[in-house]
Amino acid sequence: MALVQGTTFDDVYWTNVLKKVQEIIIGDFTYGHVYISPEIQHLDPFTIRIWGPGATTESLWSDKWHKTYQVDINLYSIDKNPSEAVYKRFLNDSERLYQLMFNNVNISGTL
Image 1 (spheres, one colour):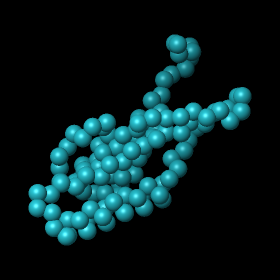
Image 2 (image 1 turned 30 degrees about the vertical axis):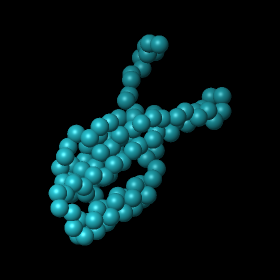
Image 3 (image 1 turned 45 degrees about the horizontal axis):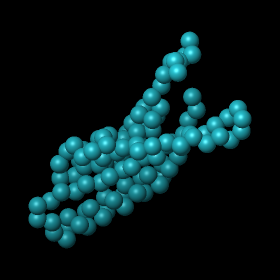
């Protein structure tokens, strides 16, 4: 189906969801690599991979609808000789990431 004349296409999932989540994480984590991808691309010691596996549309009324986007956030830590300090750092980072997402649970907007 073609776009209606006089309207434009906005990639809501990429621009308003995935990129905003990435910006929130980058704003808090000053180290590591934070990227958007369906697959692992970086084998750095610390990376966060973001991907959006799907979205659902819910009809509220006949003239209004609501869209929910799902976002997967994966935290990776690679170390050849992990010690207790490595595991402690990983658990601290995962809890920090969880708290960051909890504090920013709703990224909402209207188009």
